[in-house]
Length: 335
Image (cartoon, rainbow, N blue to C red; front, top):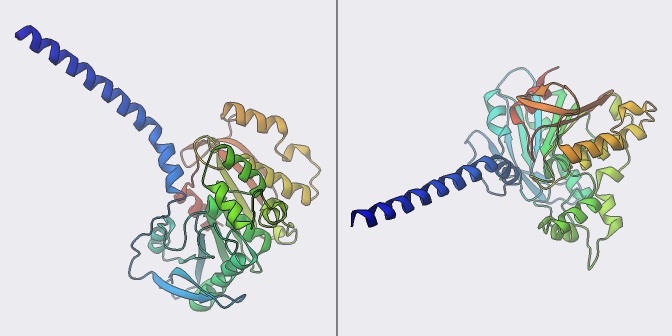
């Protein structure tokens, strides 16, 4: 009996050890998974009572688009942060920027622009981009805004909307901060199809496609194919960020950010080839996912690649599909 008991005890002990090892292994991979889910989280959240729920009438078709809106209590004009929701989310989804803006008493608006990207009226359509402009107009009219400090920011689908707003907004926006952004729906459709991700179905719905992708519609909604506002780039700053593991631990390959950055340089007639991301640099990042030299850090993350021309900056950092929220807000506020 004691021998049988000991054998049973040893088996149980071994099973516990194996289970713990599996749990540790899962935990070690969890941060990337969490960041992937977090930055396209469709769940709504409870908003503080002093963050107002407002309705904004579209200047395009008179439909009401809702937004969460915080007005500064300061007698002095304060910056305005326009935080754009993700691909599958809407104005109700949790936004880590909201409490940070409230703590600093900054004007803040988190607008809807036709909801999740699964209809033709959403997905950076002319209607959706007009909604974003209308939200900025609303905030300027109803809050004490320093109009020289209007900032647009977003991650994932919000980064996609940030790039599109950069290309098409009518407002004098000072800074744009785009993280983990989609820039080319045609490419992302192929990538999402290969990954069997739901985004492929969303793109078909957004672009009025049937059995195959409507390329014309996809390109009209893609920042990579939009006309570059060269004059805006003399005043406005654009910060483009991507985690080097995105596309593996996340849904948007870093090529979206890199190719968009290169497009801007081409449209600016930049002739210095060292300012572009070369094919060799791109391939090395995709193969090794490591820094291309000692390039410093953002927050506590090593920089893998950094390029800058004038008011446009591209940073590929050690990370996945995410925004480094505190860092991003501080960068917008620092002049």
